[in-house]
Amino acid sequence: FNRDWWLPALTALSVIYYIAGFLLARREATKSWAHMLIHSGLALGVIFSLAALFTSKETGGWYALVIAALFITEMYTRRNAYLEWFAEALLSISLIRILNDFRIWELEYTLFGLSLTWLACDAIFQRTFKDRALPIITRIATAILTLLAVFFICFESSLTEGAIAVCF
Figure (cartoon, one colour):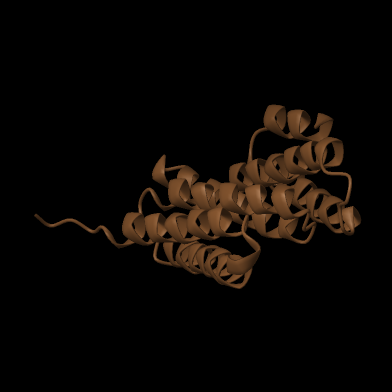
């Protein structure tokens, strides 16, 4: 029974806090408790997503993906545009961990995946979330990640992969 269950347990606790707060937010009498539970669930999720990244916890990316879904839900429910950056950062953490789980450690592929993640988030949020706060920051981050991916693919990989990256 040599099991390491801290990440699933704490991710479940984050989800329970968030759902409890989400349900309590419907009643005016319990709004303060609801906000406390929602913020606690989101903060706990961010802390343990970062812990999964820095400790190289296997399957940690999938748990970070769950926390990113909570942030996206909160972003759309409360119309809080600043949560977009948290969602994109958590999706980036989950991508890094999932790629490591599949033993993909090449920097150029990670950067390419990150640029695609930020590009997809920007496109989806542009179409579905009209109250975005400073979308230019997301676009600058996407451009930097894309340029870094192209640079590393051109100079670290074969000529064919570099040509594909330039077309991207």
